Amino acid sequence: MVVPLPDVGGRDGILKVHTKKIPLSEDVDISVLARGTPGFSGADLANLVNEAALLAARQNRKHVIMADFESSKDKVMMGKERRSMVLSEEEKRITAFHEAGHTLVICKVPNADPLHKVTIIPRGMTLGVTAWLPEGDRHTSSKDYLEDRLTIAMGGRVAEELFLNSMTTGAANDIEKATELARDMVCEYGMSDLGPLAFGKNQQEIFLGRDLATQRDFSEDTAIKIDQEVKKFVMTGYQRAKDILGSNREALTRIAEALLEREVLDANEVKLLIEGRPLPERVLPSPQPQTTQVLKPQPTPGVPGRERPQPA
Image (cartoon, rainbow, N blue to C red; front, side, top):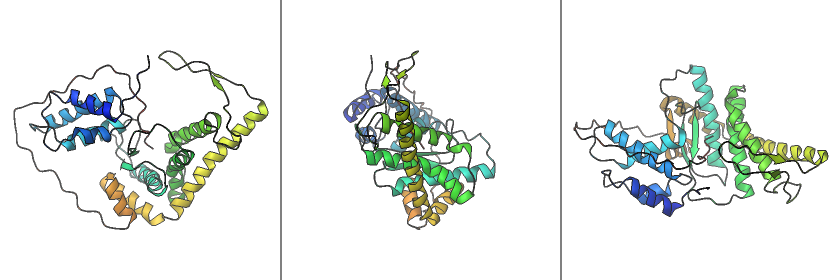
């Protein structure tokens, strides 16, 4: 039985259930959290509340505040920070320019989802993450939107080439995802010059312990044309990213240098850097009063997970 991901109304209800026994601050707005978590499953939302409660407990606060939920959302979306991982200065610089490339392209293409945050702190299996969040639930995707996704994926590799005169393995996942997306555009969505045709039939649905087999129902000549169309989509995105970054070199350098200094930038800070304006000083949080109350996180239910928003 396949359980679909909840819509905004469903996420609102799920969050209310999981926060029922947790003391919340007055600044916490469940409806805002529901709108800001498209693509989250029930398990993700339970984990979001769980992590927020743990964060408040670690800081000895009596109530969970909105900032706790924002921090826990980053952890659920992008993975846990691995600050213990030691990177050389050269690796940090490469990562900063790579992520700055993704970030600048997101801000320049017309159909991208809004930037959420960019960081060069290792999270999960990555050395850096550029994350975005759609403004609402997305049920269909246009060709323009998918082409912009390809351009964003190429932003990291292009930044390495233009600004560091090198290529690294850091772009491996970007290239893999871009190639898969381009092939889907050709073989499933009928968005290429081959016309509105589907190539290859899936033999079965994917479940635990079962593989997806694809039946080849086209000729060798058609296979060559499919490969050509896939390459054309990817290389068009590559050239678009190259044009964008090449004409905004100063902005990209500012973003990369700010990442090396601050490690994390939000969307507002990136906007200031692109406009050439100085970043405001960051205010350190004031010490919290000690208290003996400990917030207990709720258990996470066994609900099927989801495919998280793909950080670049």
